[in-house]
Image (cartoon, rainbow, N blue to C red):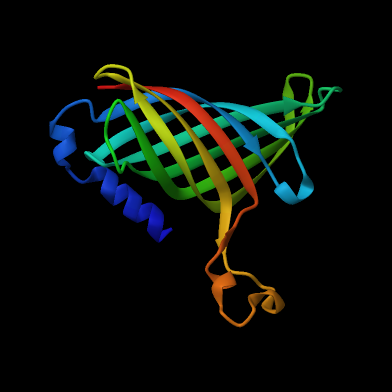
Amino acid sequence: MKLARFALLLFLLPSPALAQGQSFGIGGRFSLVRGDIDADTGAERFLGGQIRVKLSPRTALEVALDVRTDTNDALTERIRRYPIQASLLLYPVRSAISPYVLAGGGWYSQRLETLAGDETLSSDTTREFGWHAGLGGELRLGSHAGAHADYRYTFLTFGDDDEESDSGIGLSRLLPSFRGSMWTAGLTLYF
């Protein structure tokens, strides 16, 4: 919760980049999300959008929402999944093709609805929070557009509960592990 407040504060603070123009962008994206890697699930397609705000020439804040809806064959159940991610993007080099690293938090919601025709009989929503990090790149398409693609590890955790594998050095507590991953690609129009 403290991270969300900090991200909101960064978003609301005035920035030199905001005065330069082309610092606010909105666009659509396509995601391939692989859920639980231990369950060996396949990738699922999500459609969504993002808002990107430049905080400085080398940093940006992104807020993204993806959506996927599935209905069973009998049309009695519908599952809606809608992850929301807030990410800080760091650009070590700004050029026509700008690589970036990203990190942030995500709120992953799933709503299960029981249906009877066009009527929803019941609805149950579950939410889970998880950290994510990844790498990507943005191709500038003039001064008012950019195409991007990135790979994100989702549900990152640090530390290993298995003390036997530590070999006495303590490095396993610093190494990250993840539960899922996702590829995203999109187009952003900057104003």
